[in-house]
Length: 283
Length: 283
Image (cartoon, rainbow over all chains, first blue to last red):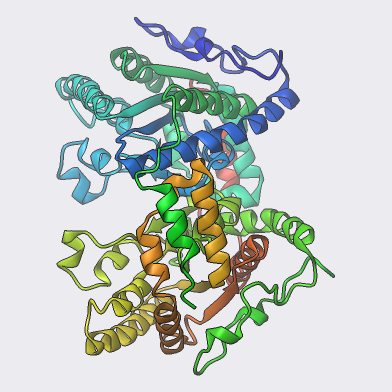
């Protein structure tokens, strides 16, 4: 059956990580082609929307449950496209997207998790981090903006933070969009060739690209150190945009399914309210 | 041609307002039926998405322009449905929805515009207010939670605030979802009849419904007092959900069109970057 994706193929096993042996242009766990993948993603829409609404509804009876989707990846790996094509399948009322840029002066005055805590999703919602606290052990490490001891402290701080979130009712879905170095080149080329995409290009992107091996190594260490039971990592081959979208759609759906969401029961007397309504003709 | 909507039919003329003479189940400015209306809304999607991306792109070159869509209406008038079906047509990255509930204790310590200012959309984005500062001259007036003098002050404060936003680059689109009292009854009935919708029902909704005439009067005064050149009101007949969605889709599209959005020009040397990219093979 070509429309189901076995997401266990995306789950990062515990232990040391070697990204170089994980293909970036593969479609693990999915037997179909691009056309099948696009149809399969569209086919998830109704169930995603239904379960998201149930999650949102739960809040009205005091549930603290919520979902946090963390998207990490190199420039052009498709975090934005995922937001448009996958997160865009559910009701925007129930979604809160936070795009983390370089920290502001105020944010720099605080611990690296300070601004992250401000963006934690509300109960009943799906929060999405486009970049995240992981930048503080990735770009910061690659550029040497913090010393080794501080980076070490941060892995532990991240794990403690994510456990705290999980204990408080947050289902965490972490996705590393795993892009090939040649595919990044093609995508940057496209941004330069197409005047409508110039705004997405920044000369600094090539400076970061020059640091590719250091970034891959930083990712490997970060993935290994923060690949916990409560917040495991998924590595999503990201050269094929349709596969990336489908894979994350499935992970989001499975996170929602795992909550066994029921519509909340009425906390009022339905018959009584029906009688009150029948008698209400104010105008 | 049945797929275009003449939004001038929705614009509230200056002067005193009598909501009772504006039909709630009409489809002003649109010649088609429900099927045509749904197709017409879907047909707006590509241009909406394209222009929204241009607005978002402008921010990268320092533009301060943004859009604020204000949705006001009685319970069940369909603010949520509008968010799902109309606002959901554009990239969620570029949208920030704020649903205003009863003010918190902290919010009550401040002027009524304090929490509103915190929710003003960022440059380049479309902000949507699901309820708004208008609650402070509607529910507050109907229940007498502020005296007449304070309510008077607020109309002026709102106009000054909206002018300030407009001067700062915000295009404001204000929509009053004009629902019929019988249609509200039918929608509340549906929420009571369908257990999957019980969570949307609150016994307090009937208490508010009993105040319908007072609310209509408060709306009439608020609409009249805040129907300004920089932030005019639109009254959207809201009994037909498809019309409500289509009308607001058109108003959003026209707001975007009015900005004459162009893709930003490159602020770097494209040829130079292409050469740098060609030589970049870090891995």
